[in-house]
Length: 282
Image: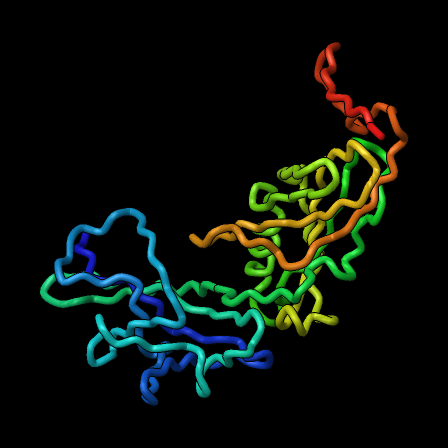
């Protein structure tokens, strides 16, 4: 295997809400093109055989360009007057991955597939507002559909495969957790299933160019009557910590005192069915 010199992003563009534009990055009033140039994801002065996979990071507030006068030191930013607006909600970036290998000089090979990235994903103060979650429950053990909106894009902005990639990311139940707070303390669960709807641009300004309705189906317990608060946390596919979505959903439980309830539907593959029974207290 060839010796690895560097890994780069190249042919970088961003969607400004109307068209794809060449990304210019800036330092002290000087612009460099990340379309014709190369954002450094990894670089070494001591090339060695490339591993099969590597973890690399790009920070659009701290970009190093291969074309810069001091590539290892110069710090460029993507958010400036001629680049991505600092006020743009959930900007989308598309790019190609390039790998530099070393023999007597660096040879850069570009993967011609386009890759996409949503950065600064924006959600308003309450992601649950208007999403249509149930406001009441009457059972101690209840299947609750917690609904919220998440920033998205349409197939008219990027290709349909990328739209499906976002939906699949959102539909992965293990990426989510739901926490219930209320009169009986805290409960955190992983949704049993997640449904992601069709992205829409309608009333999506606070999210960016589009939003998508996400339904988190959760089994929750409500041991007594009262008002409970539900919040959702999402673990994205970057290395950042899980993100607590802003806002919360309020749900009122009206439980018959001293009544027992269990999971609304139990499926058993033999004659034994084990269940957990919740008994409502005063």
